[in-house]
Image (cartoon, rainbow, N blue to C red; front, top):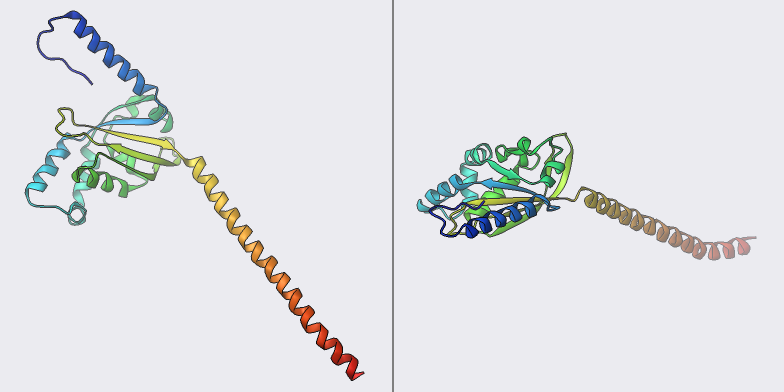
Length: 214
């Protein structure tokens, strides 16, 4: 969001900013990617305090302090979502998704840990495949991405993005199974050909032996 403080010398500047903000919101709202705007500013301050203690391996730190992950899940709020997010999660309205971020990681708890490590390490973004459980009970495979605020930024806004890849994953799984079945069938076919060849090679001397015996 854009906020203006102080006196506006030219009304046109104010109108321009309002129009720019409206265009930005319209762009986000109609993007095909599901998007969540998250305010994790208080976690940024906590990370700073942890760094000040000399902690460099944040992964190990979280292993010793798993309660920090639960704290983030239950205190970091979602402040805005777009229409695609509402549709993806089967929500009745955006307000259903404006809660603490823990529900996004219910099906893949380890993902929140990775998101926190990325922020602590100063990454600009992070992406991975994960599963999410929607409000209407579906379990989806999604391509999950995070864009972290870039310091020094006055607006500590983190953006989560999700693309539903459930159908793609299903097709890929079926293709892998077909490939495995084809490989197995090919091995069986080769085994059959080998058996026939061995039988032929064995039958020839056996036939000669039988003839000689007669």
